[in-house]
Length: 103
Image 1 (cartoon, rainbow, N blue to C red):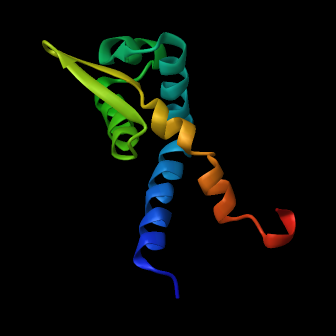
Image 2: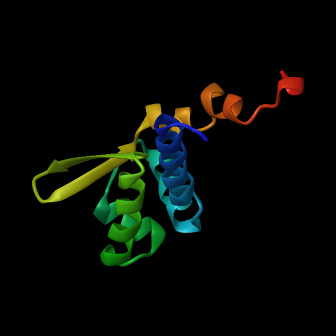
């Protein structure tokens, strides 16, 4: 039986990979990578999505801690959370599934 910390680690990665498993969310992340940061108004134009659908996808990415949000006036600006994105395919995750004979 595995411990609680390992269970929490699995849940964390499950949420992150679920967030990444959608074409629209990958497109959002790509656009943010290219621009550095974008407001919702820019993203709705770039992805040709109504704001309600875009907000749904942004929430999933935010809940997975893959995005950071800053509110300026009435607009929300989003950018990638580089620490989390870079951590996804980190040594920690790779080692979790590495067999002894592949080390």
